[in-house]
Length: 153
Image (cartoon, rainbow, N blue to C red):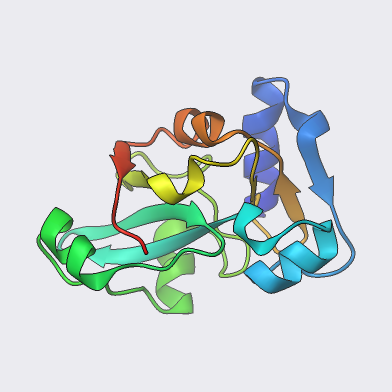
């Protein structure tokens, strides 16, 4: 169901030709990189993290990981990921297909600077079998990101 919502979102932007469907899973960075045929860093992974009044999303390059000290300094809280049931409940998406597109306006999206060096990346499109190829700036724009952050290693 989440893929259909994301697909309609990109139809309205005239970008459905950039959505790619795969029979093999793209649920993890490694699976996506192998399935698509790119280096893992070009997979844009989206983490859903707990915040006091709900959740937030953090998009980063596939080879990046949260630097807990930087995250705590920037956001004033510890980075705590939601469990899979909470992700589905709060975002309408399932783990392995989480993306920052066509989500509730009350979920802030942040993009880590680890995504900036790449011409294009491949974020999920609402399920583990669909991705879209976008520039880092397009991910920022279409994900209605709050700001670029530097919270990863």
